[in-house]
Image (cartoon, rainbow, N blue to C red; front, side, top):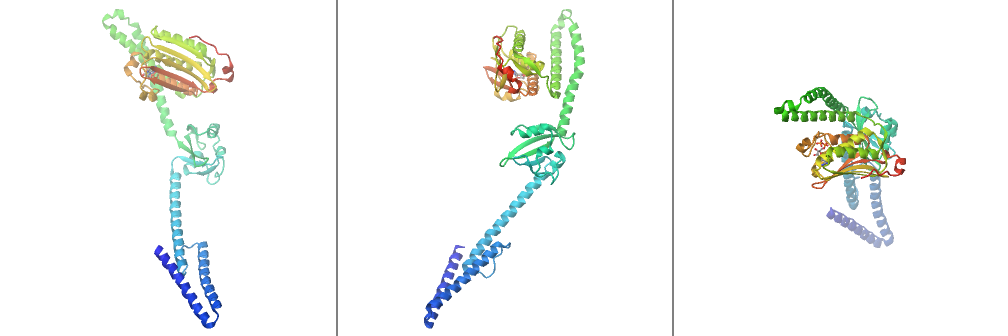
Length: 441
Ligand code: ADP
């Protein structure tokens, strides 16, 4: 190309040279040098201006092919422009095809996808959004999503910042369809709202819950009977079978406890709300200490520390159950002469009840799984101490019902701290201002 360009320039300049020379010769012969030179220059300029005009007109038009019969350098220039335009047009076609394929794929997704602008107005939505969210094309384009998906729970969730997905929302088109909603921020101030049909999953989850609850209920009666008969058998009357009787009693007690814990979990799982009581902390701490001492039988040093709000809003029975599970674990897993501290503290950002022990500690890889049902670090230690493997799972559920969370810190050979962390909404403003009551150590 550069050679062609240079050749074209040379050609054009030599044509100009020949033209001017011819004009000069004719001018000398005719004694009109300036006139001849002027005519030659004007002719040359006219040809090139005409070529420029043709290129300009062509650029404004839709066709890419170059106009015919352009002089040297202009033809090369035109070829270059045409090549660039062709490449740009091909790029545009490719991009459009990609965009169309992307849109088709998004439209064919089984999940409802809705693109929202900063004010939560609908920019675009796919086919599934029509059936799952009841959106109508083109009527709902540009409409605010909150006018269409009216549930208050959804509106509040949409107003919140990027957070957790919203699970188990009834579809506006059919109450039976249960949805999980997820918000994905993209580009500048735009959001993708993705709704997935989880009806099938919810049904399976319901079947699982019912199954566990029913099995536990069914086991309760025969276990009570077995337990009752075992209690009637006096070991003194059966001296040879005493160890067997003892083991039978231990195991039947363990099974009863597992069934009770499973029933508690089933109840917590289906529970929607809570008793909203004002739970006094000082007496609760005293009760926990008494229970810990009874379980410890003097083997541990147990202390309480009350540095927080005197009360918390929630269910007294459930909170006690959660806290005493942590205290009982601390006593059960801490060797003789260990220390156990129960501490209550609060400030403007919330409150926390922590149970610290000087037990064996828990290896870090187990920590994320401790609240799973029947998950134990050491199965034998858990069984020896009468554990069911369900305690922390119950704690987690109770805390979830209080919009609280369980934090676990542990160091091998040093000990563990299990903390129930509550948000500020659980402490009424007046309770924070009240004078702190020390319950003793
Ligand atoms: P379990 O009835 O077996 O104690 P939990 O759900 O209460 O069941 O606890 C799960 C597991 O977490 C326990 O089996 C134990 O391995 C570990 N764990 C709980 N609390 C402590 C603790 N304070 N110190 C050491 N390990 C603990």
